[in-house]
Structure formats: structure tokens, C-alpha cells
Image (tube, rainbow, N blue to C red):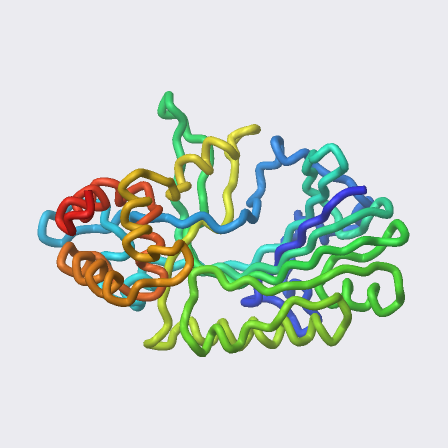
Length: 322
């Protein structure tokens, strides 16, 4: 058995969940050979990844006439963050994981054999940040931004099934050729109205897929609302040469556990579960006084982001928690 991943962006996805303008050199071109794939370590296309929080961004400082790194959370509002995410894309990819854990990215939309498959549709609003090895050589890049993702995990009952669109999967499910579950992920886009639009995880069928597509279209429209909070993450990577995924992830990964972070978390949530309102007020007041944003998700990022370790130590001292 294996696992397959499909990612498709809503910006250029038709009503049937397929790409309107597929790359003529991509998996949909010509007559694809079922199940042909490239091992993940050798795959040089973009690979969708589980979101990784990113703490800093490089901007141009008009006063100094130079570039400088600033914390995403130090930017004043969602609009200033959206302006730093100028690119939008729709991505479609298929991968298979066998029983040994080896991941293969498929270059056709047809399954070569029965097995377990994971399917993802992605829309991304992002910027590209390059990664370099210890020797200074370019090793690839990451897409940093926000996005919407439909994820389906399916088990096929026969070979040569069409996995080329999310609605094709729904059709195959209705015919009894596959089964599985579907979920919707919203990456870095947060507001009360967005939360209310997220559908619950359900079994795959045409109704569930239509519901997921409608939800993502509605959530995408909320990206521009004034009350929407934007928190960029690394959402995809691309290797410039084989076997660089781990190195790229290390450069964009920002979460860490530290003594200062643990002290602050214990102050914020004394029982490890519920927030202490008075302590949260004090912590957010300190964050605001030190130039940090205090919107949704800001405390968690402050407590765990690698880039904030110096400020965390300062907060522990200033709040007299040591």
C-alpha cells in the first residue's frame, strides 16, 4: 500500500476541481503513464508541507535605504502583511508513501495500483525565500504565506483510477472504487467568520467534496476582510538539488521549546490548558510595549518562535518570573 497527496489551488480551479490551464509539461500533458513517480529526495518540484510558522521577513527600510529583517508580528496590520505576499498560485501534486515510509511524487494522475492515497488541494498567497547551505550554495526555496488546503486520505480498490481532480475522486468514491476521509485546513488566515466557515471532517463522497470546495471559496474571500488576522507560514518547499528538504526545513522552521518559553507558558496557562485572563493581559501588555502584535495566535508564536528567544528572556526578567 501507499499514500498519495494531491494539491490544487482554488484561484485557477474550475467548478469540477481540475486545473483550467495545466502546465503543458506537467502531469496532465499528453497520455500519462499510470503511477510513474520520482522519489521525494530527488523530486525538484514544489512539495506541499505541513505549515511551519515563520517569525521574520525581510523588508526595504525607506529611512536607511537598506533591507532589514523585522518580525511579522511587528507589522501594524493584516494589510501590511498581505502586501508582502505578492504572489498567488494553484498547485497540484500527487505523492505516494509505501509501507516502508518511502515517499514518491507521481508524474501522472492515474493510480498504478491499489493502495492508500492522500489528496490535497492548495491555494497559496505567498512570497519566495531562498535557502543556502553551510557552504553558501543555493539549495532551494520555500513559499512563505497563507493558504487554503483540502486534504483527502483515500484507499483505492483497483488500479488506473483517475486522481487528476478532487471531483474525480468524489466520482470514484460514488462508484465504490475508493473510500476515505476529507478535511479542510486554513493556514494563517483567522477570524471568527473564517472559523465558522470551516466544515467538519467527513467521509469522502461528492456531497462532502462540494461542501469543502464551497467552504474554501468562501474563506478565500475573507482573506481581504479588515478583521482577518494574517499569520504567514512556510507552506511549500522546492529543492534545487536532491536531498535538501531537511536543510530547507531547518532554515524556515521557527518553533522551539526553551526554558524561558516554558516559564512564560506556565504564567499564561498555569494548569497547561486554560488561559489565566489576568496573566494574559499582563503578557500582552508587555508584548505591545516591546513592539509585538497581540492578535490571534500571537502569544503562541511568541512563546515558541526561535526568533523571539531574546525577547522571551527579557519578558521573564521584566515580569519577574525567574
